[in-house]
Length: 388
Ligand SMILES: Cc1ncc(COP(=O)(O)O)c(/C=N/[C@H](C(=O)O)[C@@H](O)C(C)C)c1O
Image 1: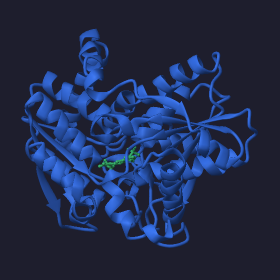
Image 2 (image 1 turned 90 degrees about the vertical axis):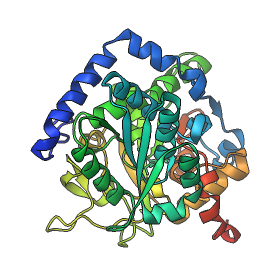
Image 3 (image 1 turned 30 degrees about the horizontal axis):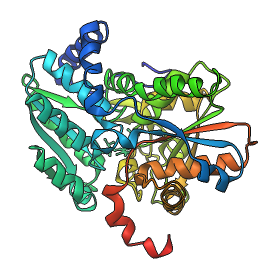
């Protein structure tokens, strides 16, 4: 296990050699200054550092703590996913692997991976649940225009869990030439560590930018949404040892955690093994993994990263479930009070942060990681727009 009781590699023997090769390549890369030089040379392409600024009208609306926004939605391709996709494609290049595969749910990771492959001249195959292909059509067009082959996965619930299973199956049959770019802090070791490492540019920048703007002070609370766990572990890990900084992860509460329609894995799940790793899973007593639901495809997943599982158990991070309706309120609030249309995933964090701000004094500060932009979601939100 890599994070308390969680992590590990619960995979068929066939994958062990490849995961060992990946772990060695990852350790070599992060110890190699030329790897970081190459990653940093992409900052102009990505648009890093992403900005950190106050949300004055949202702060006024909440009536309590001052709210700040970390704008990962301004990155190239529209979310934090580009940080991890580019870094993993650089590792694939160091391994001499030219064929890239990926899974995607919201399509943001798929677009980020297709973008990285176009940039570095690699083939790209993205596995995507057929239901997600329908509800994130804009991103499917973008992936195809970027040169990727998008495979609609028809089995199971036709969402992210089925796409991920299909991607692993495909990887096992082409280990020699293919590199699997995992999109979130999930999967067998070293993926959760690798993805968190590359996404921690988010938290590192927040720390530098916030201290610079606040005479060396740290924020009092940082809020991020939780799907597989990449933007949250990337945001939180640089603050893990700053006890004064509270950390809040917002999961998908769907139609409510007492309904069968949610993805609140850490709030109501149990420890188990899923997609090759020991973590929390939404499962029945006999270990059947539940079908999940969320208005946001990116949070619609029955597993979660093992590092978040360990932070739940040791209390370092608080987790809440934000329902579809509350997320849509967050979507409206950021749009109409700050002129920023957030991804439905990020809207969960907006709602959670506004609720927290209400209960905190005005001299306190909250940072929200806005993980992505909402263009991909306007189609599905349009259906409920009159209620916004
Ligand atoms: C804008 C945006 N914000 C948050 C998330 C949640 O993913 P994490 O940050 O890995 O928890 C996502 C997740 N998107 C993935 C995707 O686009 O494929 C997701 O569906 C899977 C990679 C897990 C997202 O697109």
